[in-house]
Image 1 (cartoon, rainbow, N blue to C red):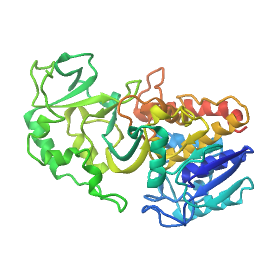
Image 2 (tube, one colour):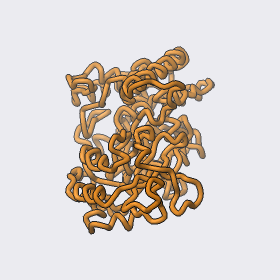
Image 3 (cartoon, rainbow, N blue to C red):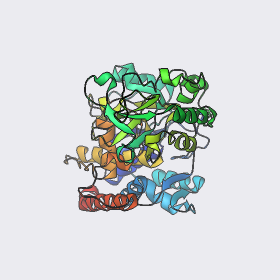
Length: 435
């Protein structure tokens, strides 16, 4: 048995390693150094392009939970990260060059992994394939994937995502469920703003600091979807005739239409995560937190993901992939990494881990693992394969993991109990996972 893995980033290396560790021969294709994307500078595998931090290592944080799950399940990426870590307080940060060198050495020295250099512009017509070419997938391969999927809408070329907040952090004293003109079901959470509140919000929004444009982006990627801050700069009331228009929405506290209304739309099937409708933005993350928290109902909001607008190739995974990251229309093709809609280094590696493990089990005639949604890794796989509405890339967060069946005082205590539940499940699956 042989699997062709395309792309030696974090997801591709993790998937190749898990396959090889389970007795599957792997041919790993990497286009560097023959060809690079503008974001890459070195020739080693698993290059960290933007930051050397893998974020929080605390179990009260969802990404800390995901990393601990991966450690316990035998992740290559987490093992190399731990061996090359540098001091970063409560976060896991690594020596960038040392980390990439260690991953490269482990992959190249594995007896079941054969590394080939060159760009793959179209998928082989037969054999098992795992594609992990990342958010900067080459134009030639992207065009080939569009033809394979048969629908241009199934592959996106830039992110224009609004922020997400947890439903439990919304102040429902200043918000209410309703649809405009009470048509249909009450699908939206409506956050009212008075004239004075809107004035203060608008003044800060038009002056807020934007994120820098990277070398692999250009301003044209923002033309298809105007950032909310750009819309606001066109005039004081422009937003009130756009995403913040109050028409058809009466505040039950006053019986009148507010001056402005920010609508939140459900972002997952469980109704635990909501997005700010029309709030695609290119502001720095800290500025988003500062300015958007001026919306009265969101003053204590927990932001599960900040808005982003950047160059990114990702799939409409709920239409295309199952929970094993396999292509529904052709199960011999598996995908992993950020192109599937997971956001972040750790999430990318986690998708490669699960895709590799599940593929190896299928090739050996074993039943799938079906990691439950109560685990961070299982929740992420179910999110990308079942998300409702306008699918956007997602970091791991507690909002996509089922809540506890009992109340716990304090957010950190609650998150710690969710993590304990998840890790207990991982331990119960561990023997099967390692096969």
